[in-house]
Amino acid sequence: MSKLLPSETVKSLKIKLVKSTIGSTKKQQASAIGLGLRKLGSEVTVANTQENRGMANAIRFLLRVEEA
View 1 (spheres, helix red, strand yellow):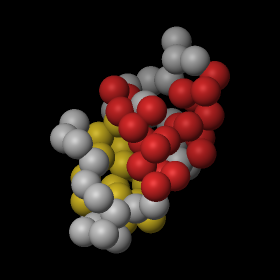
View 2: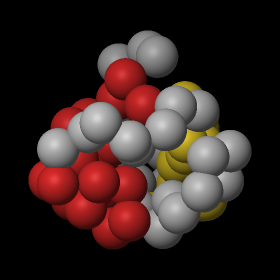
View 3: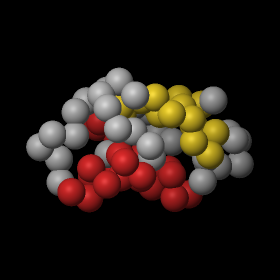
């Protein structure tokens, strides 16, 4: 995964859960749920806010993030 871009350049992020949250901490699982990712392979488009980028950064090893 590449570094997340500043919020001024991109309006939204396309996030896909590519690895399972089994074995992750409760905080990491909560970040995935907070982003709207429930099942493996699920994909969401979220606003590029500081809060969403922080949650994505916390579980970056489970995700694939793209500009949308």
